[in-house]
Length: 514
Ligand code: AHR
Image (cartoon, rainbow, N blue to C red; front, top):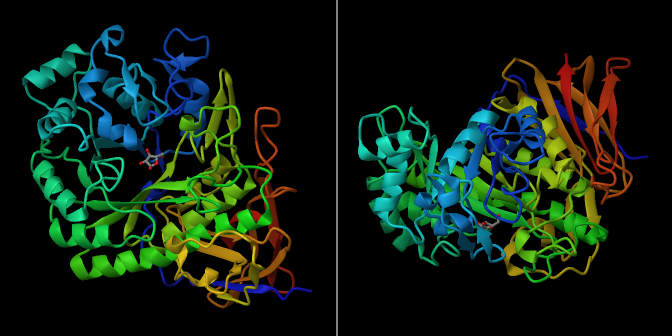
């Protein structure tokens, strides 16, 4: 018999608030991430409000999307905002050179996107084009969005149907400037950023937080250089995708994968945990006043594309593995909530680790969607430490995956085997005062008995939602849209001890009653 893991929530030691923006989303002009998945146009038979499909918008409203990043990604650094204003029929079609070489009709532009944000009730994070645009173009876009007075750009916005200025909460200057955004060195980017940020002006009271484009994966030098050289910024971004094989040419299958690719995928958030600690050391040195946040504005699984789809559209199936992966990311972001003030899953609809997939009029909520829904109480909650004792290791000996330098130095790979704690836990006090706990059992073969206490004292009962499935790759797809779904969960103390069993490969979110 496995000894129970002992968890003790330290409710009297509140940590930082978990910004709700950690549960943010990303929607790029990529594949059917916008066209088809969200936008169907006003003439469509699919029910819509001013072109945005109602089924998808309603499902997104239910998970309270706190912030939405748009229009890219790599697409952002080729996007010219003037292509997307004025009468839709007159907008210029362009080639989307980043994603599949398809025609970008520019039907969805600034007004349409801001309408989507209004319908969702979300903040907006607009990524401006540093790669192939000009500083004047960027400055004028921000003025067009936010101008109050009787300026030419405000008049143009009004003529296009929007009287009042919009509120723009976040303004990104470039994306992946080390790669698709211009192949720059951090010092060159830092100079450009300072130049551009000088002209990113908006009326007092409606100034967006300015976001500098940072590094990826284990890189620390972008954070080091940007935080040392830039003063006028709110955040530095960071990107990390979870590829089962770490090989961009053959990433690993989304379904029907071996256990080796289960553990290698779920090991990635541990890597992130490890290097976020290093980013924080750099920021604590260069920014002791804690003005700069980290926005982890692209994360999620990236598998080989769904057979039969355009590889440039990044379509992949979504399984229980993705839901567990999402929960592990949330736990890491909660742990680093002092600096990580935003994270954006890539991407919201139909692309990569999507929350929602669509096929014409049909829509499926993925296991990842349910993971987001289960964690709603963590938005704006106050994080709490959890003391953990007796967590067994989940190991897989020599799984035969390539060891790629990007992950060396992370303890779980040090002996050539994969090894990680079987349990990941995160606790918080929700904004309405409840004690909440999220647990993930990453071992796909072994249930985990758990005993729960708060400040050394027993708890009375717990209730919430549990998500698991029979197979590691159980998926929701159009033929079986509800295969993976959270189920109600309850447990009560017996003889003063609250004991529960966390099933193999599961995520549990509960309210703890003392
Ligand atoms: O999310 C897909 C792409 O991944 C984004 O466009 C880019 O920023 C990243 O490389």
